[in-house]
Image 1 (cartoon, rainbow, N blue to C red):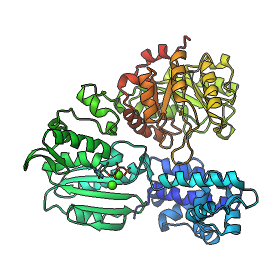
Image 2: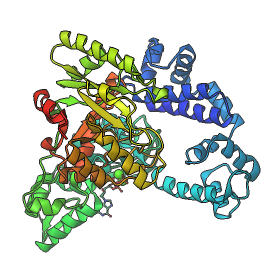
Image 3: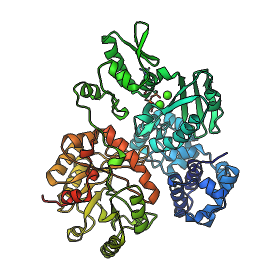
Image 4: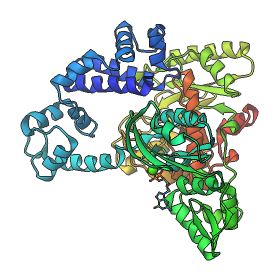
Length: 574
Ligand code: DGT
Ligand code: CA
Ligand code: CA
């Protein structure tokens, strides 16, 4: 039974949680957490590497001890340390650590004083006002806990898009190989590139005698079959991701694909348009009386209501139908439109690969330029660069560029925006770079006004180029900080700066609505990988997905420009 990187990562993540609950050495906790992240993002199958006896210490942050743990998990599906920790501490407690405001000490107190072990019990204790009476908690903490639980309830059962992709794509490939299968599409929110998905909706067109249903429930990742009929089934994968499948005849495939891609609001609006024309639109086709008039392709469904085909990423009933009717649908940006990447890290700070390795990987992707933007000194956890180190890196980039063909490295920095809006490195030094990517990495708790002013002030620096991951959120882990995004976008336009969509699967911000806002205000958006290793260029597709959800076209994206067109855009004149 194959073990996914995500499974190994989940074991390490839980070991880290449980160690943290036991107040273990923070370095040990962090080692497991870092390794979990590295394994989850690794481009190759780590379990397979282990089974082949390959050297696992090539994974950054993985020493002999962790390598042995990985081999153990790959061979046995579990780890002795993990089991032991689970016996000592109820693993459900680790769930409580995910609630903002609860650290190990507080979780232990809740457990020992109130016998709170699960999120449900915690919610009840908060509702009953029992938490405020514990020493070190108080009324404010209690109400924050209550709010956090509510926020979590809405997000916990969802999967990040990139994680869902790890399960969806192999399953789709598996189904495509079943005899009699004509087409397979993963529909639903996954196809619309929403940042998280609740479940997968897989649509299959197959011949009547195809064994696709039997094969589906026999898929090795299936943990539970919730329901199974001749044309539909629902299962839970070992990852706990739910999958709905529908099998239809080829003649209905377009109509079913349209129905199951959603969003619900969009399909209902289209169905209504159909009704106005005397058409009945459902998952089997488009019908006039009993006669099927369309439905084999999605394009035919849209054509039946007089519209061009609307890309899935736009189907949220947010004006796309009106735009389609008026012939104003955007021609959305595509992955292959990207000519470069303006935010990436190297070994010099918290990246895993050298400048040359990063450059060559970017070139293999067909990129023409790559900006190296390592962290600045303030970010000590990432070994941020001091001025001398940055100067040395700039020299190294010059030397490399002299020898590299087909790709140009740009000199940049991801400079910390300090609390007062100043930048972590002197303007004089920043002025010698090709671009300056600025980011907030601290004090996420400032008031809306202070946080906004902080960022506006940062953009006033003469060499500021791009605001990185402008909301600071980590999907399902950290809420965005509170800012006036419209003011920031307008200031960027005034100052000649840009905003980023960070393609890291946990970031994906600018969010779709803000990307659209930037477009409307005439501010270009950079779609960047924020790669910390060569495999992370893979994430660019998720950044492009978010850009498409924000209605961005090729020309709205800064790094669709050639290097020659880019340079003048990076030269600040204001
Ligand atoms: P999710 O799974 O929460 O991330 O979001 P979706 O959009 O994938 O929603 P899901 O899985 O509940 O349903 C998949 C699609 O099926 C949905 O996008 C539209 C369609 N659908 C589901 N229920 C209804 C319904 O009651 N009416 C219509 N017209 N379509 C529906
Ligand atoms: Ca779904
Ligand atoms: Ca579903």
